[in-house]
Image 1: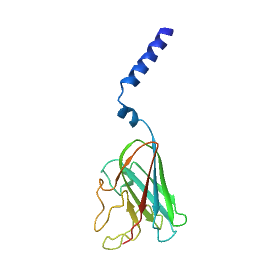
Image 2: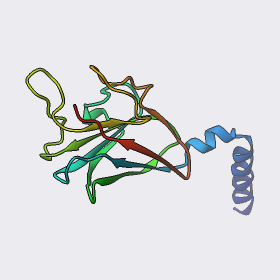
Image 3: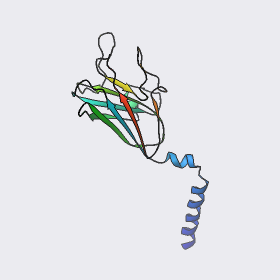
Length: 151
């Protein structure tokens, strides 16, 4: 019995030594924090969404890695996602003024509510690409700032 425990311990040590550092880092959980500013009023929530892949980007909440509403206070909000493995993620946020969990648009498709993206790309007629809104998440904490835009 003692030999099995010792052999198991040796195997665990050998595995940890032989496992590349990059692979071990992927098992870590990081915190992603986005500081949102530029709200035109204090109505509703900040709806934050984090995507790991382009699938569903940026509006399909069912395909998002993490999403949620966050309160607005004094014209600002902080979107925080815990347990995010290191890597590249695209981030989007809306000022969900009526708390319906979507970006409302007028009859020709122009957003009626504020929005923003990781890296604060300029937005004209279409949503920024996944790559343009991507942020590299590293441990222990990655913090970004996003300023909302209104059209």
